[in-house]
Length: 319
Image 1 (cartoon, rainbow, N blue to C red):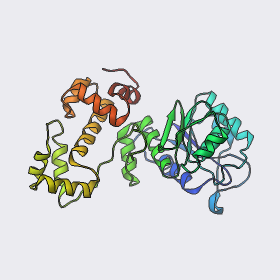
Image 2: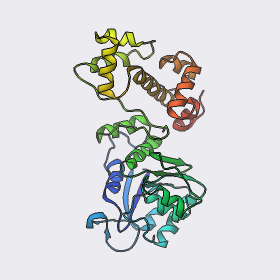
Image 3: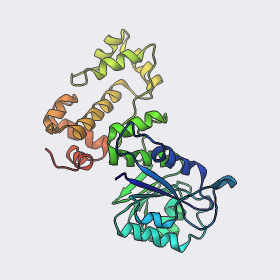
Image 4: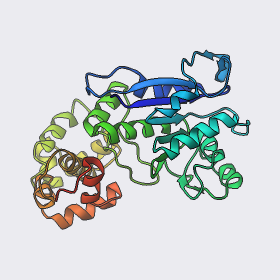
């Protein structure tokens, strides 16, 4: 049975954050996975739902749909001080009690907090509203400088486009990194944007300068398991190391060696997700040499140790 995603809309729900949920989950992308989502807009209150800008949204499902939804997403509302209908709060509490995954985008966190679902949990919202969330709900541990927060089966994201980061993260948890990356490429966004903390998502490939960097990046990606140096890269590109660093910074925003490190971590992530190779073997295949080096760099960039990452995305304990 397909994973059911329900997006709750109220009068005053914002357009962009609502559209983000449909773009990620509602568009049929079964070419990426046979287990694609079943998506529905759910009216959080009676009557026609007039979202931001005066647009009327046809929400074919009522709150009863939340009783069977696997993931429930609450987008932002224009005025987070608006009273939330009690039937919606009750439905969210009931869904949480039965184990459904709940998520909010931007000021949608105020609705989850009003339902009491963020008490004692870490959460985030738009940076402009973070202080207000902390003041109104002092039992919530508000983290204002991250793109999104995962605390158990409740997820909250920062403002606007951070909802897209969160939605891609949910796809990755459900269907794996390859599918999430494919969706990101389809909608022309990076699979990951750096936030205040590392997240369980792939680092994006940098922009390629077709005249200079494209062939070099392909060459390096084919040799990630080798001990490549800055001199090796400059020699392959037929430029000085100084010129290479300058061009790399201009085209990618990072240095050649930082890019190599991020791609090695990315390869390790994929191997941890898709193979049963031991960490020592993955360290060699990804170019880290030793398991200790892999653990050091992986933990620093991703935020968790390699084996923790494997358990998260494989659901197992393979060594």
